[in-house]
Length: 571
Image 1 (tube, helix red, strand yellow):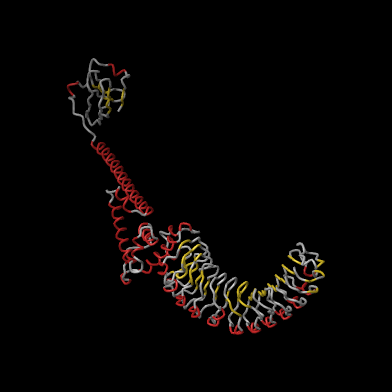
Image 2 (cartoon, helix red, strand yellow; image 1 turned 30 degrees about the vertical axis):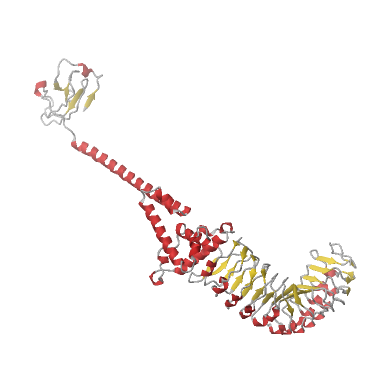
């Protein structure tokens, strides 16, 4: 089809309307005057294929076709071609409708998905806010149209009711009802923030899927957290453990049954009182609360309920009480550390003698009183006894030889009477550390039998009333790395000390020893610190002793020292 715009010359032939076939290109033409409305022209002539289109008043439409008689010209008058109604191309229209329908359906699906995603995201956001605020009702009241939120709150209410029912058998109801109590706060956290416990766990019948012990453990730890200002603890706060198993809490270890057996909160800034709820951790074998600010009485539940304890460390806290006799119930106890508890007073309970499995007992700076060595024979497995700076009294008995497992004995600055240390001490073949600093000794001596304790690594005997000479037998203690002999000893320094090749620290200060230091001390190549001040020694420091790193403190009576950097001390 050829289309001539209004500017074409054919558009200006308005006097007649004729149709004809051009001799040049076999075109059937119609010229429309400007006053004629647009209409469709169509014709079939001798198998000619004709197409039609609508025209405007100023438009000429040329319909082309092919004819078998190429040289035949047909003149058509207007009346020979009556107007025909405009025909629609139904296939084209149907295709357009289908395209429109596809676009509409696609847009509808996209809008539906977007609306669904927005609804889901809004619901999850509201649930998260409920959990973080610990308040189910406040948000729900402003979201009355949300079924998800309503169900979420309803689950929490049911969960809280069931949780309190489970705990009612082991927790005082008054504690749970007091809103600000550690117990109530622990319940609130378990209900509105925690996501590890399920309603199934609260079933009191274990054969129906219930696990009350799992509930007790998690509750007890959170009650401890809130009772001891957990928000001030070092490390990650437990309140962040909403999706963390109890066994993975900081300071917690479990056995293969996922039961808490170790709780170590050393130096975590705990303050306040230990809640009785901790007694729910009945499988605990080790409890360490050392170096915190805990106060009040040492709770009796530790002894009444935690009977599986093998290690109990309450050192360096602010407890103010006496030691309850019920500690005797801890028959499995191996390690008891109560040092630097200056508020712990009274008498060491006799019931402590029943702890026959004790291996370590630390009572440093204890204000309790008792003849401590009356207890020791009842602890046949005892390896460490620390009584440093304590008020315990008594005399080291000759039966000390029977303490065959004892390795560490520290009595520095205590009230222990060390007069005439018994020679039986030389029979303690496992002794590794022996320290005594006695202010009550009256003319006591150092037994030569100490030279038989060939496992000794630390030997410290201090006290102004120790007299006599330094035993040469000490030269047999070749494992010694620390030797402190300070008191009122006399005589000369034995050359056998030169055999102590592992010695790192040697102090002979504050004695009345005379003469020169033996040249054999030059064989002690590990010596890093030598103290011989406030003595009557003379002469020089042996050349073999001097090195670039040694620290020497001497009396001014020792006149020659090539490596002394410290000023001498005048007696």
